[in-house]
Length: 208
Image (cartoon, rainbow, N blue to C red):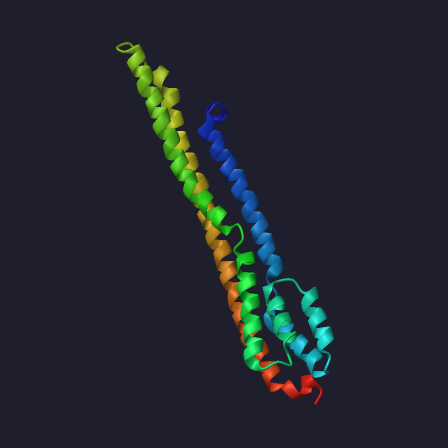
């Protein structure tokens, strides 16, 4: 089996490259999303305590020091704190539009690799079966099973490899999508909450 993998030809090596690339992409994205996830409720409570003291500059600084899209949305709202609620909501919306593509960066590439892997495995199977048929034609009527077994094993190997690679890729992709959806929900909650807070405390923040 090891010899078949090592001498499996370009399809097997392409599948191995997809496997390594997908693993690296998944781990990088998972770490990125983990860093971006914060306790939104605790973050907002602490920020509101700062704002109630009239220290908007410190609140903005806290947002800049906090990783993740939630802090960036709140920062966009704070920079428009003295503007009408419609302008604050618009600033938050624009910040959200710019943050979501960052969350989804390279996610399509991972999904593409997951779709390519089984098709590449099938291609390897077809090519190996063609090689087996060519051997049978060249050695007919004296073709032996030993002459065909390597090609047949390689045919099954590429299909098995393609499926074995694509299944965890899809599982990892769905895990990342669920993490992004969780972050988007946090962003929506934070955006609504900060706009409501700024509108309710408009006089306090303006120093009137």
